[in-house]
Length: 339
Length: 169
Image 1 (cartoon, rainbow over the protein chains, first blue to last red):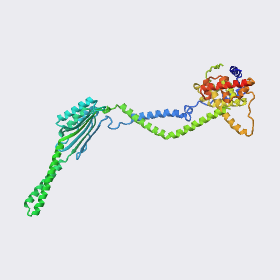
Image 2: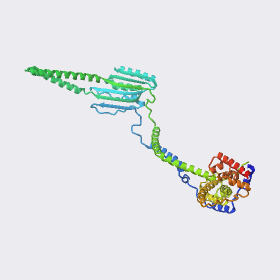
Image 3: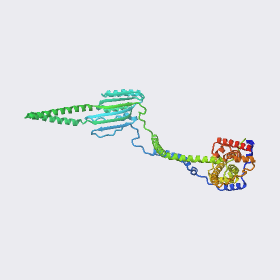
Image 4: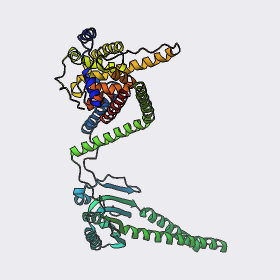
């Protein structure tokens, strides 16, 4: 008997259900069937995850967008201004200084505070500016030197370096009276990245008063010395006079140094070309809303990740148990069917 | 050997329609699998009871009513095999002989009938689906939960063994 003959015989003898079975089955099949399950019923057990995951992801994105759109703007974020600080130390009150934004740096910097006229003050400013490329860096450095000379100042130190990024660091001294003007003009050489202005009172008045006191004491001692009767008293007053003279000399030297220091202001100027040095233009409202939505999404992702890390061992155990049971069942089926 | 496929008609609207169309196939498959008419009839009844409960989930887009019913029949049969296996283990102690029909399919020659009985349930199953019921490879693979290639391998192995046994006799 060939395979074809076997196949033909098997097909010719195709089993047919008995009439009794037919009646029984048709009676069963004619009963009203269970209603079609709802969508949730279709996704039972682990299958619900298939439904839950996209729903959860959709909710997370929707929540992030809602928060991004509805959260109020943080104060002062309207224009991304570079870091700007102004401090007045030793006596004068601290004052807020509206720092310039990238697109209006020159105009805003004209408002840089000047030292108080008639007082000895230490004025120091640090200015970081971004420029486009090394050519612009060279031009800006030359211009800075020109401005300083123009204002009657001088360069204390200079460092100019170019490579993948270019930097130029200048320490400049200008007359204190022209310090604010210098800062304003220097700030036009690039985009302001950061600025810091410090004004410190040098207390010259107290030093002068002290010098006056010492001088008065010296005069009194000189008079007493002229009237001294004993050799011992003359020796004591002579020593005291020498001591007061030394003190007065020291005070005068100190006052002279303060006057010199107050006469010039120090400006630390740093010019940079590196990428990203430029302050970004203020973002639009939509961009800011998107940024906030992305922030929320990032936090949601962190929470989900933390949860996943915590739940991963349990999920692995469950998956292993499920896979083992499935494999055992399949092997058992194979064994049953092989007999 | 040619395995023609009967054209699948439009999907049945009710389970009664499906039962009318595919009862013989379900019964024939279960008969080949169990080699016992009474058992096959019982399991056929159970299959349609289950099908009634699950009819709401039947999706014609995912497969024909025939493969869906044969899948249920297979699960029902495997459950029966499991319970039979447990029962047999219990009864082995009492040395009760297993009941098997002398001729489980009418119209077969005694040699072929005898040869079929020597095959395993798994081999008879693939013969029933591919040869007797003329399911194509993909449909058979869906019913058995294996790949079409594995179906093809099992079928040729079963036919070869059947041929050898028939000719040995």
